[in-house]
Length: 612
Image (cartoon, rainbow, N blue to C red; front, side, top):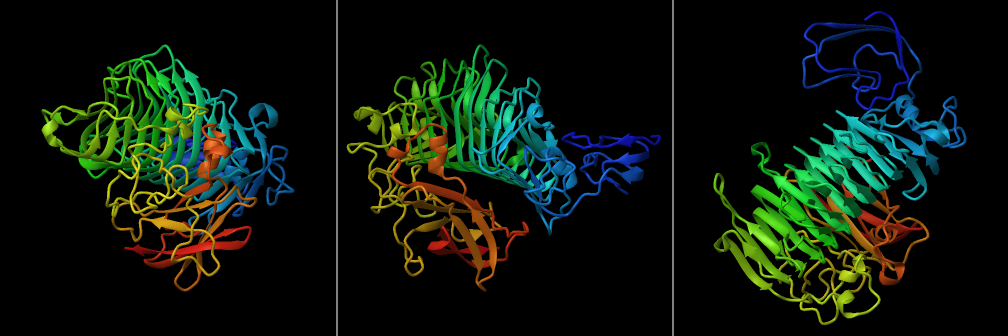
C-alpha cells in the first residue's frame, strides 16, 4: 500500500484498518494514521485472530498521541480541549475512546456529563468502538442520553477485555441490518450496568453477546419497541458464551406486528447463564418466543441455565406453532434450575405457555395462565437422543401438567388446577400490566407452601420486591413472599450499632467451580438521598473494591412504570461482585469483610469466603 493518510475513523471493528485474511505478507505504508504504531494493536489496526495474517507496518506519523489518564466528555465540550477534567471536556465520545490509553494494570474511565449526545446536536459519531481496559460511564440512566437518531447502532467491541459501560440512557437505534444496538463479540470480562434502552426499533437485538466469557448485565431496562421486521430481541446471548450473569433485568412492552415466526425479549443459545431478579412483561407477537434458552450443541455440554426470582407475565402471542411456547427452555446435557418464578396472565392462543425440554428441576413456582391448553409441558423424549428426566416440586398450576412421557417426571407437592389468588385478582385498584398485581393475597394457597429445605439452592435472600425470602422458617411459591418484612433487620454479623442487614450468596464461592461471582443484597427503609456504597476488604484490612450503587431494583420497576412507590415497602438493592479488585485482577482465596454505607455512615457489615 502506498503512503497515504488514514485517521479519525470510527469503525467498530478495526477503527482505521481491518485485515480479515491474507495469504501473503501485507506491507502497510502510511504517512499519518490516527496513532503511530509499529505493529497491529487490535484497535486501530485489527488482524482477525481466526486467520493467519502477516503484516509489516511503516507509519510515519500519528494524528495524536493517546493519553494514559481518565477523560471527561460533555455535550458542550470541544475535541481540541485536553479532556483532563470536567472544566475542559472533550465533545465526542468516539474521539475520547481513540484518545484514551489504558492497560490491564491501569484501567481508565471516560466520564460523560449529563445531557444528550447526538449527531445533530453535537456531532457525535455512532457507532463507536470501545478499547480494552476502559470504562465508559454516564451521570445516570435518566441523566445521560445517547440518541442514535435512527442510525445503525450505538457502540461495540470485538476481541477485547475488561470493559465497563454504565449509567446511560440509549434511544432511537433503528436499523434493518443484522447489527446489535450494543454488541460484544469474542470479549471477556465485560460489565454493562445501569442502562435504560427504549424506543430502539433495530432489526435484531438491543444487546448482543457473542462468544464472550465473564459477562455481567445488571440493572438494565429494555422497553417500548414495535416492529414488523424479523425479530424484536432485547438481549441475545449466542454460542458459546461462558459465565454470563444477568441481575435486575426488565424487558417490557416489546412487540412484533404483521410478521410470523419471531424472537421477542430474550434468546440464549448454547451458553452458560445465571439470571436473578428479572421481569419479562407486556410483550406480544403473532407467533413468537419471549424467553428462549437452547443448549443443544455438543461443544457446550457443560453450559446451563439457573433462573430465580423471575416474573413472566401479561405476554401474548396469537398461537404457537414455530415457537412451541412463549417461554421455552431446553438443555440436553445439564439440569436447568427454575426456582421461585411466577408465570401469570400470559396467552398463546390456547397453546402452552411454558415448555421444558430436557433435564430440569422446577421448585416453588407459580403457573397461572388459565385461558390456554396448558401452563406447563415437559417435552422429554427425543428419538435420536433419548429420554430426559425432570422434577417439579412445591409449585402451583392453574391447569393440568402435561408431558410427552409422564413417567419420566417426578412430581412432589404440586397443586394442579388451582388459583394462586394474586392480590390483583381479589382486591380492586391493581393494574394487571404492573408487576405488583402478582403479589400473593392473604388467602393464597402458595403461602408457606414452598420447599421445606432451601439449603444449597442459592435462592436469593430477598424476593423480587426486596422482602425477606425465608422469614418464618419456610418459603412461599412464586417470586413474591407474602407478609414478609423488608430485608432490613439485624443479622449476627452486623457491626456494633448497625441498622441494616446485608447478605451474600453463594457463601463460600469457589472460583474453580462454575461462576466466580457473589450476589450482595439488602433493602433500605426508604429511598436514600445519597447512593449506598459497598466496600470490600481482605482479612488484613486492605480495601480491594468499592461498589457504588446508583440504581436499585425497586427504582428500575418505577422507571419502567411497573410499580409505584406506594406499593413498594422498601428500596431493594441487589448487586454482583465478580471477585475482582479495582485493577480487574481476581482476588486471592480467603475471608473478606464488607461494609454497607449510606451518606458515609456505616449501616451494616458481613463477611464471605472465597475458595480456589
